[in-house]
Amino acid sequence: MSEQTQPILVLGGTGKTGRRVAKRLVDQGEAVRVGSRLGEPRFDWEDPTTWAAALRGVRSAYVAYYPDLASPGAVDTVGSLAELAMHQGVSRLVLLTGRGEPEAELAEQTVRASGAQLTVLRSSWFAQNFSEDYMLEHVLRGVVALPAGDMAEPFIDADDIADVAVPALTDAAHIGEVYELTGPRPLTFSEAVAEIARAAGREIRYVPVAIEEHAAAAAQDGVPPEVIELLTYLFGEVLDGRNAHPADGVCRALGREPRDFSQYARDAAATGIFSRHRNAAA
Ligand SMILES: NC(=O)c1ccc[n+]([C@@H]2O[C@H](COP(=O)([O-])OP(=O)(O)OC[C@H]3O[C@@H](n4cnc5c(N)ncnc54)[C@H](OP(=O)(O)O)[C@@H]3O)[C@@H](O)[C@H]2O)c1
Image (cartoon, rainbow, N blue to C red):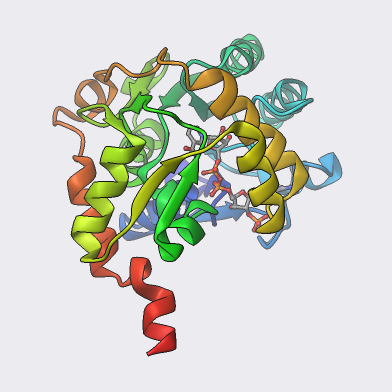
């Protein structure tokens, strides 16, 4: 199989970033193998016996771990995947990690130690958390209740992450790079919600809550316990201002500025996602 006909594996290929990465690759005429529990062959992080078939014959792989590299056991799991990938001749890996998370940096080191030709996409909070994750329920209720105080975050648009991931998977010029991917400006959660409210044309408020209150409400909303534990860590420890400053990763990788949050809010609002319940009730 020539390199051109070898597929590119996109782990998390049905998720917020992976779905966008896979679509861009397909649009470019690349062969893509989506790695997820619904993929063919099935890929499950919790079942290493599924990994070899997913990696077989692929040319490079986008690695978006779930739920987070800060989750218990994640560093070892991702390290084992990288070793297997090397063993199967898949040396080009693009690893999605979180900014300011010591465990994520440990995962980067572990994958690098496997000998992989690695590109790291070290990303800030995704803007799409408001429209493609549990926070959408808050937006639809009109009250976004989060334990984020008045901390600022330079939310990154998942479309920008995908725009960087595609050349990283296909062009050797990006091997060895660590791209810190953020939006162009820090916004408090109050400012971010105000942008969404403006774009959606509805009243939506941000209400800061205690971390325990958030965890209890998330449990009531059906968020799985391991994800609540992770959110409690991210809001309680990582969101302390260490990541508030924007970084230049999008510009370094693509030679253009990242998309602004207001653009994300307008694009997401135009799909009707922020008005789903109201439309359903109408
Ligand atoms: N969200 C953020 O703001 C943010 C910021 C920085 C970094 N990150 C990193 O981004 C990564 C993904 O996070 P996300 O929140 O955006 O999630 P996501 O990619 O939207 O997560 C869902 C994806 O993970 C797959 N998945 C779930 N459980 C799986 C399993 N057991 N085995 C294989 N695939 C599984 C899902 O596919 P199936 O359900 O089809 O299996 C789906 O493709 C994490 O490593 C996180 O650290 C996230």
